[in-house]
Image 1 (cartoon, rainbow, N blue to C red):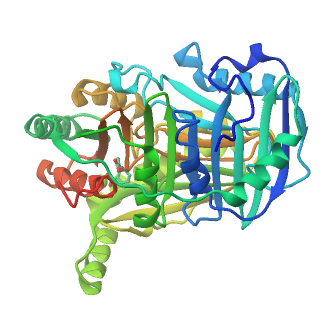
Image 2: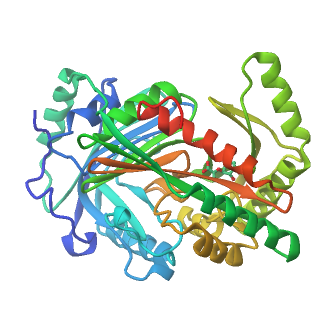
Length: 454
Ligand SMILES: C=C(O[C@H]1C=CC=C(C(=O)O)[C@@H]1O)C(=O)O
Ligand SMILES: [Mg+2]
């Protein structure tokens, strides 16, 4: 059944040239947001996004693109997205009588990891920054459900009522995984060599940390529908953020454990996540591994660099900032991490885009000091990270929002999938151990694609 409202939904143009935005929000009966996403696989393929936060208290699905925002100048991408968004909202007519975050006009999207990396073909549809204002959006916030409709030109309020009824009848369909034909683990020897060179530099210069990543390619007999992978991630990684963002024939998706920044009114949350170890085969072994991680000087150093950078990045935006002195464990299927939660009270004019600009990349994905680390990553990794390791998330017209770090993730494009995993290198890293750590970090996505292990 076709639900898209506007006839020009395939036109992607800059919002600014499209006139006035009309947006209205209705309260609707509880429904399954995943099924809503899946139901639009034909009519809105390449124009959907899905988001579930880690504890499942907030979900959004966007269908169709009312406006797509990109930046013209890579160095100014954060400011340019903010300016376009402000301009679009200034002229908007918004009817939303609900306080719920993530209702009304909302942007969903992200930024690439590094604007100076050599662009790879597979990331062609994403660019340096890409945000969607969806045509139709369902929000689930604390078990309340809302439908928002965004249109340029005139607003047909009857469309919302029609959709409200339609949602009640939608049904899930079976989701078989496509048959896998080949798997390519790019130049492992070359990657180990790069790790050793970087570690040598860390031992002999002022550099303290560099995060090196690598990628895997999976080829399938047919193209991969993003909902088949989202479906797997939702059941296999229930305590992670699960996200997808389609762009033409590609989709960036994953199950990340790492929040970059959440802002609801003036309350902010961030996450320091770095330092990793495997899960145990039984409870006792799991606890032993966790305890050893909490005392391991290499991992604690890897972690501490992230904490102090996030503190420095957020301090100017906050009236108050609370950061515990010691990390605790965050356990996910396959992996456990050192984790320090960060809480703050934002100053009045702190915008989420400005905070992201100041935070990205944290040393959980970049390094210390940041600029030289980014250059080393560019020189040694030999790949385009695209949106892997980057801020991805949403912000609404009231300035609320949440962005995560796009790890434990992959890109699907046509019949292929590219999966990414990295690890934080410090002076006492051992290359073989870091390779094992990346293998563990590939696990969640490999499993979602139907593979048990590498
Ligand atoms: C770079 C990744 O993880 C980061 C986040 C948590 C722990 C990390 C680590 O222990 O190395 C990484 O910094 C990844 O999953 O691809
Ligand atoms: Mg590590």
